Length: 491
Image 1 (cartoon, helix red, strand yellow):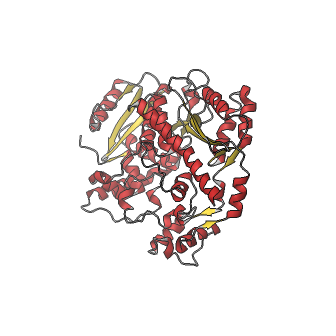
Image 2: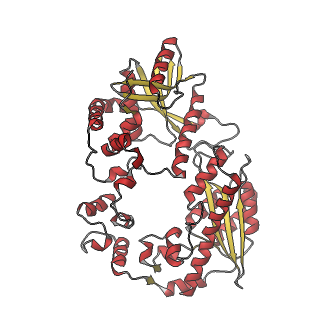
């Protein structure tokens, strides 16, 4: 059997962007490097797929031993079907140069049904297209499919005892939607195969397709001509308007015409970039600072989210706390630091987190966070889980104040903030000698993904060093808050 030209994944990639398909085939070295968060997403998808097999136990796995030998998987799938096997995992089919590996193929009541597993919580149009290319390939391989469904995560499931896979997953037939999509598949296959036969990289300008439905892994290559700070960084500007500017040759904010339609915040960002002026509303900043009550507890949480809950009382993708850092600034200038990082021992970290938090936060003084909505929401969700600590947790919530407000409301703004007010932007603008760049973990997504891999047992690094890295990252967040507040006091 000849090697396939397109797979299910490359078909989806080519449908999103022909240039990405071509580069994937012939210029793989131009791909962006995978970060920790992206790797975690792939790992999670694999584990969810394996778990879904428990919905149809006792099957035969046709995954090829060598990743590149899918034709062997196609042959084995055919052999298993001829033998009368009724449940096949990673069933592989090939037709017209297209390879499709299906997560689960099941024969029920003498009829074949296909199941594709996704780690998301709903069925998207892209998943329907995904199912359509599979249906096209499988049916044309001689299998009379009676139905094809998407298996996805039920985010209302609450774990209580042993994991119940029948409650964890939803199953939704997409056969009717696939039938609507099916007539377009042959022409699209022919078109994408012609792209791959070309000697030249397709001409394709950047656009909305670079990030939808998936972030393209050749973005770094295709966007290399776009400056680090450009019209694409205008806060909350509609993507169509950004590309309207780009299509008219405008990349820099300073070149945006005065009559281009922008809202007040966007116009503020553009004009600030043009003038280079910073804005400091000393009256509002003074009021904000003077209303703070000592001791001031600078607090930051870290959370993780898993598709498959591991602790009782949690749901899929629920934000679960595992770490905090606390810098305590006393009125006499003295600073203390306290911290908590959960052990990876199979025990729900929230109980010890709450006990430690209540002890470290004392009974009085403001608790300063950066983006109050996050810490307030996470703390509020701990209240029903630990009713015995209800009063203590509610008192913490009542003491919360938001250090983000002076920057969100533009009482303090410099062009260096580039229209944003996250702590990762504000810190270098106000305290340029303090940076996350020397840390092994530099942002929250990596911290979350790293701890998630520890919880799931897929972590392969130096555990002791990584725990130190997690502590250093979270500590930097609250130390940054201390230094930012010092700057506000000075003005």
